[in-house]
Image (tube, rainbow, N blue to C red; front, side, top):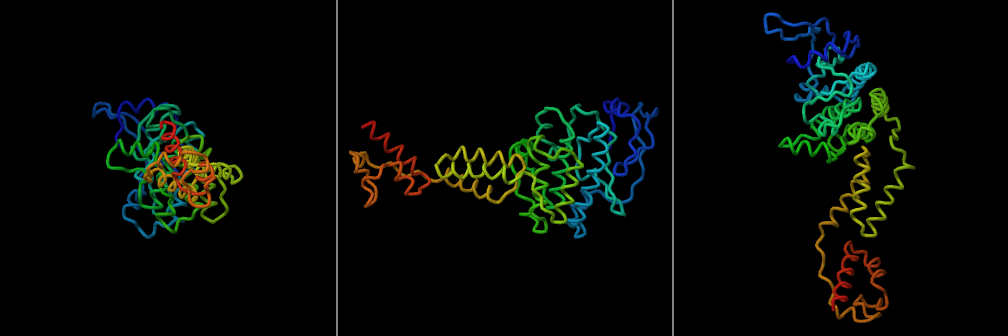
Length: 336
């Protein structure tokens, strides 16, 4: 880690070094007189490897259980720091050090800043509020740890794209596939926990790192994890389904996207969004000839429904663009 003079006031403002098992011990700090008074910190010598290296090596020893064990320790370290009004703001696999006994140390806490002070981190682990410079909180660390969790469980960073602008857009608005879709060893419950940690809005994430750890442990032992409450969620899904039936594709999409932005992982939401996308891209058939709309009872519909109004016929046909077809047909009729 390279310290610069801009970090120095924050290092001093953080007070005495935190004595927390999951955070690397800091034994001292000062300024190097022989090197232009460059700030330095003295930390313990660690024996092990970073989580980043474990992920890159795709070690078979990095099982789901081991990943959760690592994440829970990180959560405990973060909770202790957050209790002191300190946040990391730069969590990523390369600064989570896994010791030979499988205990974990969070490193680079030498650049801790007081809460509500803005700082950038590695782009693909940054939260939406960091990107938009809206201020940060403990929820910022929870988001970053959620991204780390996803990558450790799947081997894929959920937001990494070819360009920085594409990566930033993915963080702000795109929903990655459930971790269980990329790694069958990951349960749906664990996927849900990780997705909630990566919710776009800070208020939709876990209330604390401690809560994140509790849900990780519950999911690992397949304990029922109901983070949202079906009684509250299902009515919204039902509204989206009804809007889809009625042809209000934009409203259906808005409901479903809101649920995903809150961190909800549910196969039905994915299927409904697929249906919306299919209907939005389906070609619109040409409007019926105006002469077919000459008088009531001659709507040009299939045999046996000569007196069926267009609105009812649209429902009977169950065509994704039936309403749009009739709207166009009626518009032609008005013009003629």
